[in-house]
Amino acid sequence: MAYPIFAGECCRGFALFGNSLRQDPWRGPDAPSGKIFCNIIGQAFLRHDLEEARREPERFLNDILQFQTDFVVRIKPDFSVIFANRSFWEFLGVPEGLPRGSSLKDLMKKEDLEQACRRVKPLSRENPVSVSEEEMTGHDGAKRWIQWIDRGIFDVNGDLVEIQGVGRDISRLKRAQEALKESERKFLNIVEDQDEFIIRFQPDGTLTFANSSYCRRFGKKLEEILGECVFDHVDQAEATRLKREHFDRLTPENPTNTDESWSLLPDGQI
Figure 1 (tube, rainbow, N blue to C red):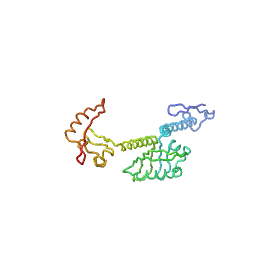
Figure 2: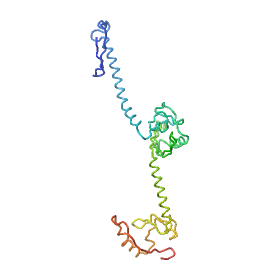
Figure 3: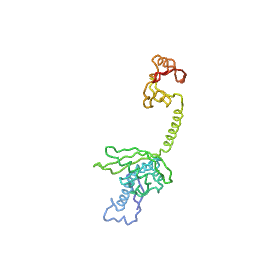
Figure 4: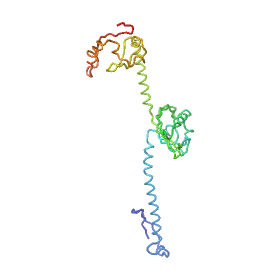
């Protein structure tokens, strides 16, 4: 005797029974034991399907997190791990999928751990998010700059119960910033060593930069001269001429011009 096994409206198979089930003194012809057995199996299939459907979004989200190049970490205040993605484990050089509850205190470099402690200490219910940049050491000894965005998770009493951190490798950006700073330093050194005056100012004449030669010529420090008007160093007639014949002629098509002018020094000399 064959009985179909249904999970909802879907037939998942059949159960075969011998002829002994035809003699069913306790269920009757409308509800034999085989039918009840198959119904139980069908309900088990249905519960399994529902559980799988519930877990599918979790697996989908986990796959997204695991294959992120950013670090994604969730820990308790004592630094025991609730979740960490593959990128973070690979950075630390430890097997992926360490047991839940493993402590980062046993895995991170001492200096990196101290930085992490300082990073999460200020988290509060009023200020649950912090952003910081730290230089960390990977398992291979290479230094990498990581930008961390940490969010504290608090219970109803306001106590910190979990911390979620997302770390992004910004080493390339840091190197570019350092290269830019070095280039600016070299350029500034060249400008400062010039005997000629080098200044930069806005269209209204407000000085935004002046090299050492210009500052010395007027007997002022850089911080004193910034914000002054370059036209204050000439009389009104000369200022009007410079604006009309020199600066007003500057355009995107003709961004440079040459002119000769005079300046009035603090001692009255021209």
